[in-house]
Length: 555
Image (cartoon, rainbow, N blue to C red):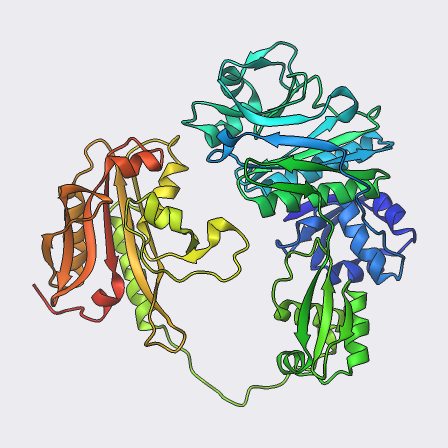
């Protein structure tokens, strides 16, 4: 991600003047490159997208101080004076919120600009354009706790940020620039998320806009409430921690909030570090080096990780709370190598000389892509990680065994998909505002548990496609399948199928040599409703591995 920072502001945080060449060398340790220098302005590219805490002057300076041997600030929360009560009605809309309070700030226009830029960058990255998280800042002196995170009817009125007159929530979505930009995130809802204080005054209409009265931060603001709402608690907490850390760096003292959910209580923010074990033998195997334990500890300390011996072959490493990108010991090996210096590792020639050629399966898949594009379909790419709710409940299918993630970062990515159709329907649900007809397809991996295999997981490559238009039908999708099979010379039979994802009587299974290799039909209206779709939709899904192995068998 490309960002801009002011060199003088960066140097002020560092507490030491460094030359541009020295700064470039230090930034490289953070996987940041200087693209351009215009006077005091540095145009940077943050290569590591897993480190959103580096998307600001304060975040970059925090890490660079470590490399310069400067003392590091200890981030603490004094106490938790504010309560936030979360209503049950948000459980399927935007269920999570986290807050912090920063007191004693002395902000100038430059710091406010830095804060707003960080907010926008986090909304874009962690927040996935505010779908996953969105951030609000408020003048804490103007509100009265406790706060209430609840829902309200579209008729509720308040003055949105940047406006002088009251608008209803419905009017904000139609008239306010932010409502027009992000209104699709609330499409189809009968009630909208709202944040109120104890006097019933509106703080925010998340994830759209703050109120003009309370949600405006100026150079006269001394105490700030930071609020993050979203659909994933871990991401919400991460965004809050980053903003809170920056405000502490700007001179604020942090206080927390107790979030009262219908079924639990949590305190935010949490600055608790975690511990991981690093096998020394593993580090040596991966790196190809033979460092002493003392050298490993010193380099990790330089990179921000405290380490102490644990037995003969392990180090117990303390990972800072904001380094959520460090998930496995291989990440610690990478940090060690960055600190050690990749330029110190001598390259070696490969002993084996090979001649490359195109993989036949890849060539076949490319042929399928070209055919689908020729039929008027547009290719999409989606995640192979998904969740059971999407695979089963929304598709009205009975839950079956899937390959699950042991420690998922997010509940939205808790298992591997066994079908491409849910991913396509979810994509379609996010693109309802675009013109119809829509023809989309994806060629990608699906996964199934298989105890007979060494890794217990069977991987297959599927083609999935959707046709969304008023005249979408079984016949229109069957014509697509017919072209596909004829083009690759594969003989396939169509037999009756009963699948709750499809309309009864308008669904068939594709059979080759007595084996089911795919499914075709019209999507059940109840499934379409789950995805917020109203346009008739026909679908096709095929195991391309079966086609690849039997090309040219003829009709």
